[in-house]
Image (cartoon, rainbow, N blue to C red):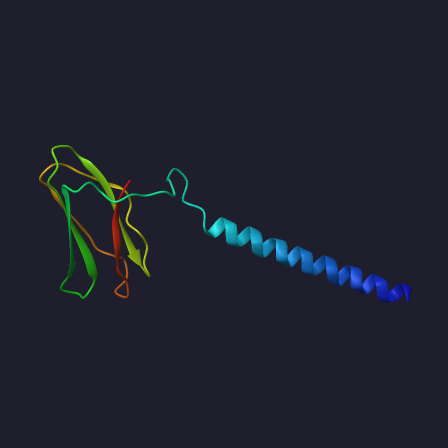
Length: 111
């Protein structure tokens, strides 16, 4: 009987250890990168966003700053890496192209 209790204790400890590592891994994966806020908002209404597909078939964003001051934006893609935060000067255009052809449009946000 004593031997049986030890096996249960070892198995129980292994389950607890495995479960705690899953929780730690899950929470780290959902954290925002260092220096970036998890909260994002839509860009100002004077920032114009156009979705297009480029010649290679990548679904991309064309962002035009029609504001009187520089705006900072980033493109968010489905199934691909998001862009970095980019400053766009007034009356300038920036094209955001994803890193893989399977990407799809999601949104453009202020940063």
